[in-house]
Length: 117
Image (tube, rainbow, N blue to C red; front, side, top):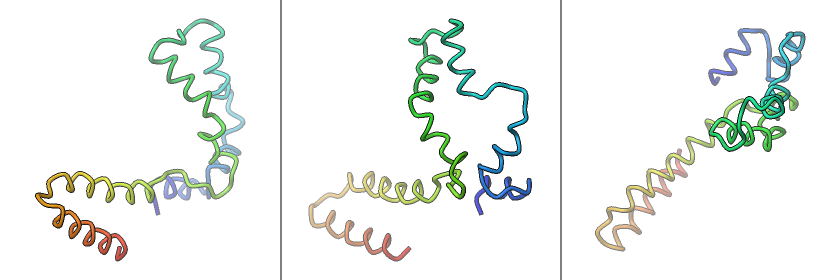
């Protein structure tokens, strides 16, 4: 179990959808409305670093909040990140092969290791 899953299960919730349903009665406005209000009230310049971050979030809002609407959607991407980490490490280590044959042998071993894990 990942840490967010353990945290949610300790709260008696199975996914992000349950979190939203639990905390919808809070009095604070939703984050998207607060982000948009920052620009409307001219509290944040769109060209500033914070403005760029808010714009990034607003453009990708539906994808960033998918776990809130889709029951069972993962809260993290640890599995994908672990798989990519192996590939990146191999790419970095491949820079130091002295011969093309050594690089091919290294690739062969890495593919065997990745397929076995």
